[in-house]
Length: 226
Image (cartoon, rainbow, N blue to C red; front, side, top):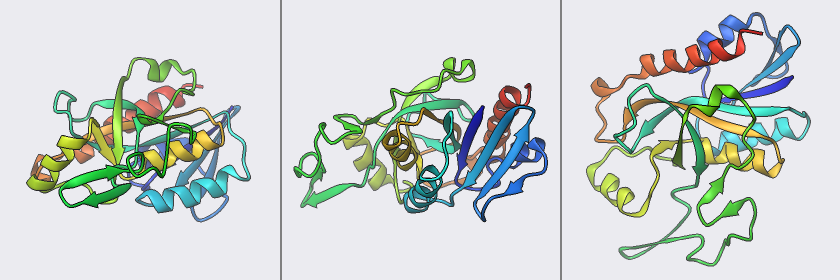
């Protein structure tokens, strides 16, 4: 089995990669680990859509995988989702892709620049129907995400966002990951641990370390048992 694991930062998955053992460095961003008969390539892209798209596209142009996982933390817009809960983001879209028309927001569909025929897009954005068949993710809550360049931390912008978005979680890389994998017809899943709620920025309320611990426990529990 050849698996690609994609994360924005090293610290989000350091406990897991430490447990995998000594890697072979394929580049500054891509590390290869061998665990019994399974190969894990770990890609650290850097934060945001541009870095994720560039580095992931470069890897997928040259390597073939059985499936890919995007793992990391996320903020929850939907407060019925618990802090530190691990979710499977099965829908995602580029929240800021569009135009302002005075007080009105026009997305790329409204502007006539994109339609549901422009695969892999649908009316919902990016619908991930090609999930890997893994028992590890079958029990996870499936949620809708939005991908942003600027995480929300202001009451006015949060209110505006909630009026035009049905997303439940927010990240800075998720839609870019899904777009690249879907273009390559690669089975994939975006797995996120909730580190905070989307609200006025207050790091005292964050559970970053606990979320990272839960995420890495999930990865180790499911991938170090071979």
